[in-house]
Amino acid sequence: PSDTGKSYIAECFDFMFGGNIKDFPIGLETGYNSIHMIIVTYNGNITLERYFEKNVITVSSSNPDFESDDYSISGTKKNINSLWLQLIGMDSNVKIIKNEETYERQFLTFRSILHTLCIKEENVFQKDSIMYKRSFNNKTALLSSPLYMITGNIFETSIQKDSKKSKEVQKKA
Image 1 (cartoon, rainbow, N blue to C red):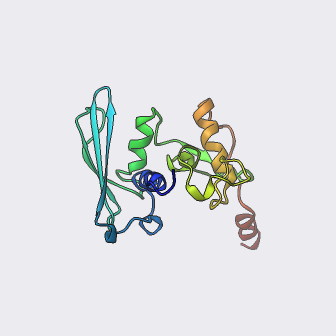
Image 2 (cartoon, rainbow, N blue to C red; image 1 turned 135 degrees about the vertical axis):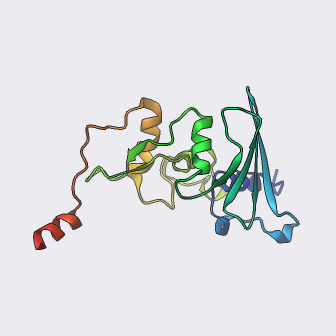
């Protein structure tokens, strides 16, 4: 059926997973001002609430494994990403390879795999694999995330190399 709100549900998931407010299509003019989500776990419920104008998600948990607090959508302190990764049994302090030439690393994030789990309406008929997010240029990081999740290997023996820019700076010095 058409025009029943399916796309809005996907947008709400993206928003609760830390999506940017400027990309969120639901505004105050709809009569709503927040999104609420309840996650049911074996050890209790986790309730999340995010207001449209805020970059904070308030978490209330009856599950002793998850702390009730305000979680940011960016930064490293109390990031919502750590809660989502913990829910699927992953460590949030893992650094994956983001550059195949220099082996430079970045933190694993839930958002780096979200596009494979929750496909936005405009991407349903894309020709490329869902493994490649249209708006994301870094294919190495996109592939490193599921590779780590499947194998548990972060390729620690791969030594970070200097980038071309840093090599040029060193030559000039």
